[in-house]
Length: 274
Length: 313
Figure 1: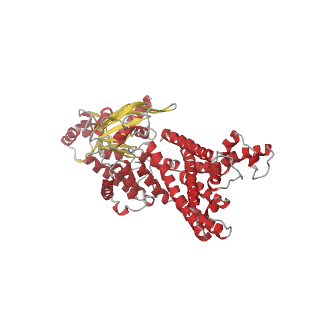
Figure 2 (figure 1 turned 30 degrees about the vertical axis):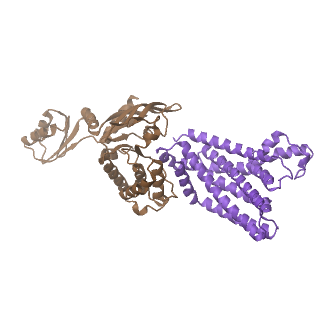
Figure 3 (figure 1 turned 90 degrees about the vertical axis):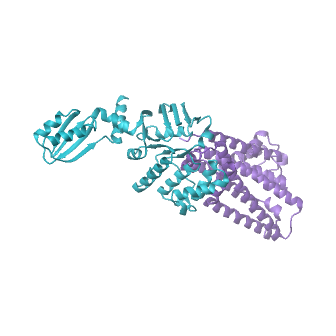
């Protein structure tokens, strides 16, 4: 049953314009990044995926996950397809999990294929192929990005379950992603650094030891965590030295994904179909 | 065997009681019409019947199995057509049915054959690979009935099956449902269209303000209304003489009578009186052109019952 829901979800999403538009933008941006990095910035593939330009491209991946997941539940509820679905012998948990995995698999495949293409295209243009260790590090990073995808899908599905309007779900999800989570993550860090006499970015982090509450708030945003993780895996940290360890970054993302997934799942199981 | 057994079914939304202590039994092979004005509690009852909504109190058994204890098993035994629904519009008719066939538990190897069979029955085979988003409302309605029939159910539950259709579409759907009933499938049809229920069902239940006020065959319900008010017989004659008028009044079982032009009308206890009435007119020298009996329609039955219950409440 779960597999059938996954298949249906993938078929349905494949035919949406959202996927087409964001997917094309992601592909074009990845190719452009690969070409620009190799040709004009003199960066090889691992340097490319650790650079700021690639960080912007990862925004498309988060956006894609959010855009595909924001109406997974609210859309079905508003259209009236849930009444048809649940008149059949399928459990709510199976249906929810099928939808979740459908969005996740599609986003993951798109990300891995396009990113791999960009990585090797850059290597080909740069004229120097990466070593085995570099390739392993790059793919470790790509797999870490899957955690971010999980986080954003859980996050968007939570709001999709909370609201009765797809528009409200979309706006809430985007505002929280673009503005609120980055603010929660960055403001305490900057305030604390300023209190410690560090007013310039990047901070001389070797001189500051951040207390746990600052670290915890900093880790609230999965995009921040993947930035940290990219530094650990590829060798360049966002603030010249690490605020979170590899384990803390992964742990924070896992907690984020689990909290929103469980909350969404719980709400969905109790959702009234009245 | 009982297809549906509902006992003490109650649903409250806060202070509002949408369905109040409803008891109902439907036998195998019945075509049951569930009638009620808008907001009477029909859809809420159906949602509880198919397990979409948990009742505040009461039980629902389908083919002897408890809906809320054995939901997954029970759901394999009936098909459901909701009043408000949507298919996945970006998918084709075939893809939609394939998905619902999978959810119905039909083995993968049998799905394709069953889907094509139903698409043919519902005259949709040529549109199998068209997106459902491009379908007319009538086509979608045929498709939603097809999805309900996917697992060969022996019970079909339909909520307002002709809602929003034009007269031709309504006729086509009614004929389809009648043919399904004739094949032995028990049908439970919720509707506010009395003509529809009269056409398709042998038994009706009338719900008003959340309470089931009557369950009976259509004929018995009509008789129930006929008993106090009687039926009206209209006899058109070539000429109405004072003698004929007097004779009609004397016939046993005539409660009231009158004349309208060349037509004598009489309100009688039952249609058994009509032959006596016509004989008396003829023996009094009257020449009859036309005889009409007017029994109460289901609409009148419905209005009388809901009015009476409303008055009591």
